[in-house]
Image (cartoon, rainbow, N blue to C red; front, side, top):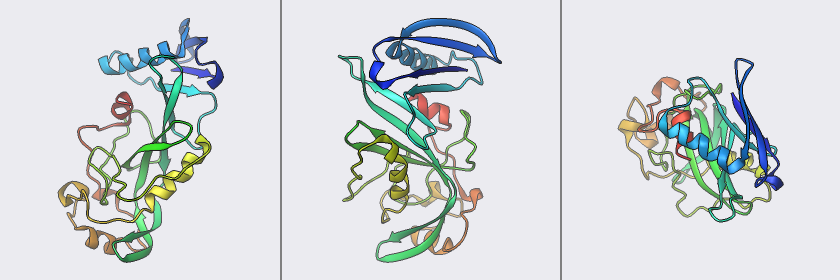
Length: 233
């Protein structure tokens, strides 16, 4: 595993990198955080990283509840300009609205919710379904089975605006807010949303006070795993 921990205030300084495999130190070196990130990104794209290694880039303390946190750098200053964080939300029942119908509890699958934050604004919300909360690099992603979500996971916000937050630690609350947004029929293709191919009204009615059946989920394409998704951030 390769893990880099760096204080946000010192992101332009040299950092020490230790590469370990099964507890054995393979290599140590110094570079900038930007250099480390670019190296990881290139190795993801080239497929040259050893199988089983985990990408872990941490800028200071990660956002509360985050599965991963990936920095984005200003091309001029090489300093961190934003972060993209991923969160796993466990399978549960959520209140939601479908057009003019309000539901107190709709069974929804576990979710991977990804948000970008620049210190002022939250942007680029994405949602995929999961069959497990124990997430690793090769964990499969599934299409979110409900409307308003593109097949690449991008959330269609419609007339809704993302909440304003003051800290990345508030991102975890935004994930819960997203799951309770009002639904309509936008971007819904039954054939790629759920195995029974139910329309949205049928789907919501079927899931009132019921746990979502994981067997109804359909694999996401072309991005199939957590690793593939992270390689494109």
